Length: 237
Image: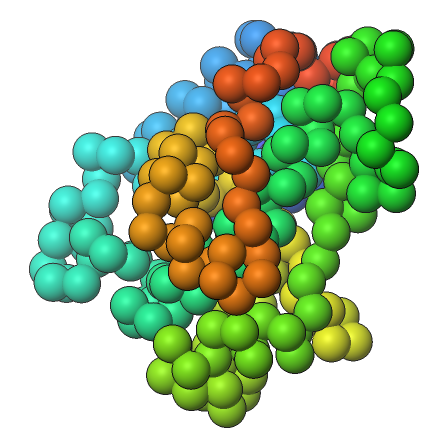
């Protein structure tokens, strides 16, 4: 087990994120002893594992008690510790709202992007889906046209801001489509952001641009089920 723990810890430090269907990641999610050892190793260097069962990736992040020692000297760290400006953070939240809010609704109700809206009497027994089957991208041209003027100009959004979000792992740009990146769902907390966006001013701004928000937090309208998809993980060696 020691070799696997060392390997997974090193890969997390080197790559910043890993897919949750990775063999060692899946073991960490189902093997309590393995997870405790992993948490201890990450904690020894001031890190913690970021995971939620609805995200397709896991990632490492600073432990809360390490934020001030690491970033305290930088005045802007309370807003962003990855060098994002206020406009870039605003764009990130807009993208998160347009991609993750509908995605979570599909995941909780066990529907997919291609569903025609008909109910599935056995849907609640399905495992939580990840990836393109539930996460729909948005048109880059539409995003820039709708929100570019509010965020410093269309050319700045297209040529600089979206590229920066892509380099940081929040989004992927695919032939004119802005898609979910590895960190978009795991780094931003749905339980904190969802209600603030749905019932806040940003929902009005997004709706005026032709992107109506859900009426409520997805978890308020459906039973939260376990991520049974991880039960298929290999038995730990």
